[in-house]
Amino acid sequence: MKQTLQLKLSQHLTLTPQLQQSIRLLQLSTIELNAEVERMLQENPLLERAEVEEEHLAPEIPLAGPGRLGDAIESTSHEPSSDTLAESRGTRDDVPEVADFADYGSNGDGDWGGGNSGDDDDFLPQQIATSTLRDHLNEQLALLNLPLRDRQIVTALIDALDDDGYLATSLEEIAEIFPAELEIDPDELNIALKYVQSFEPSGVGARDCAECLALQLRALPAGTPFLADALKVVDGNLALLANRDFTKLKRLLHTDDNGVRGVRDLIRSLNPRPGAAFAKAEANYVIPDVVVRKVRNQWVASLNEAAMPKLRLNRIYADILTRNRESSNQQLAAQLQEAKWLIRNVQQRFDTILRVAKAIVERQRRFFEHGEVAMRPMVLREIADMLSLHESTISRVTTQKYMLTPRGTFELKYFFGSHVATDTGGAASATAIRALIKQLIAAEDAKTPLTDSKIADMLGEQGILVARRTIAKYREALQIPPVNMRKAL
Image 1 (tube, rainbow, N blue to C red):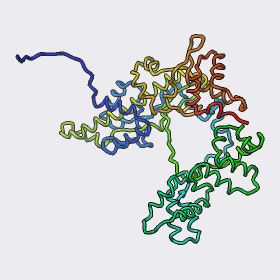
Image 2: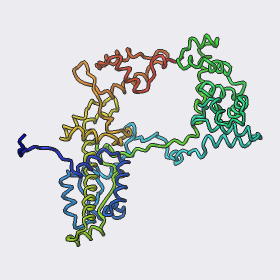
Image 3: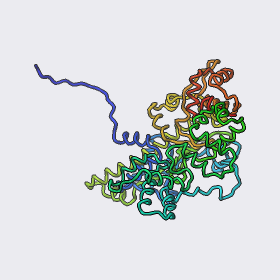
Image 4: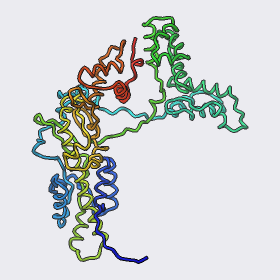
């Protein structure tokens, strides 16, 4: 076989490290971005945060394309103090300083929040549980004069409770935990369980929901109305109440609608998760990237300055590199370039987010005016074509990026949705249809709730052609129970 040399020309796309970093930063959420910036601040000595009191000394970098931003950084490389990720407010002309977001209420009529008076107590955070359920039960156990053996058995049962206060482990499995030489008797475990079930909160130590509700009912005063019937329902007939089979309940209890209603209200007043009050739930915070205000009858999107990390080059190290250009300190030079890349890519990230947010606001203007029922169908390709960006870029921008509006905080991806045809040849957004379904069910007669077929017919009368199975899918997405579960007495 003869060996030959051939020349071949081809084109291929190479992702430079700068482009890879830009793509990675674009898909990060605000919290993840701050963590990434903090990591870079620790690793790169040429990168630092702009101090709050020094921000006014640094010129503002305009929200321009990546080319203009890169020119701004390169032109100020001899003056490191100006390499700052300055505050970005979008277009200054369309957001006057007199605009106050508090002027626009959640319902669009100037009432932000619940509409209460300015009592400071209404804004105090709720008190966080200082003790766990296990600590609370052990404190009650310490008040009992029990032998050490019994105390150890009760403690083992307390340790076996889950966060809701239920004993999910069987007594036989708990007995196997103890050493065989102790010879734990099943009767001892049952007695210890009775001790646990006598503790507060009422219902703790139950092995299922029915037992939990029964314990709470037995703790009520003997003269409580409908107590006997409620115990009869909880003891083996709770499924009838859950399925709203009121006919069988009336036959079982030998009562009328008022009696069943009283039993139902009494059981509803109980707590099926007695231990949940002691659980320390972790709050998931959302930092909005964009804020939408109505200014002079125009909806305006601007960046949330609190979500933007303000970065600049370290003045001391940058001056050293400027005075010693001929030195062979390649490490500092590389870190200087990395710092410039990060500042540029972070700014470009927020620039792209703002562009996409403005396009969304422009396309969904009726949503901000009238709510979900006015949401128009929109897909990623529409915004991509509008901004001359790739569809994957729009997908990255709208994932885990949030917009604060007078109607609430929404993920940017919330404004995109499929469409359903109308009889006029147009299209209706799936979000708008879900909002209409929610309104129809909220206004229905509880005694004769609307079926999925009836809702489809009612939407058809409004010109929206939706199949019954589509209504069922949207209803389940809204976590609305079926018609038989919504029926009331």
